[in-house]
Length: 77
Image (cartoon, rainbow, N blue to C red; front, side, top):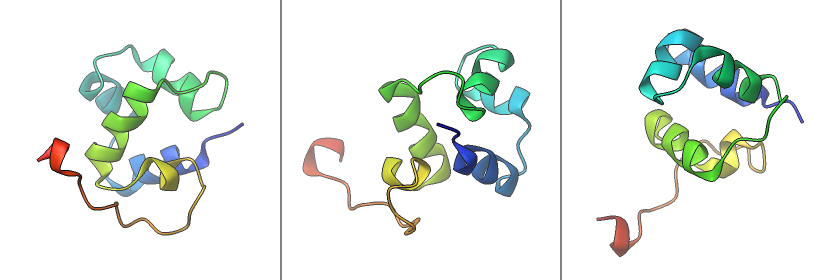
């Protein structure tokens, strides 16, 4: 599965793969493999990306076309 929204969101936020990988505390080639769909994205990384982009994991995974994040639960407050 190719995660094309990962690239779209990264470019929309004017980030290079190197910058985003640094934000995620990983090597750039590792992030590149996620973006190209060569490796599955770990849940923790997916959550970080959703927070960075202020969207939902469902939007990043193309399960919805609505980029608005879900309301935070009381646990997250």
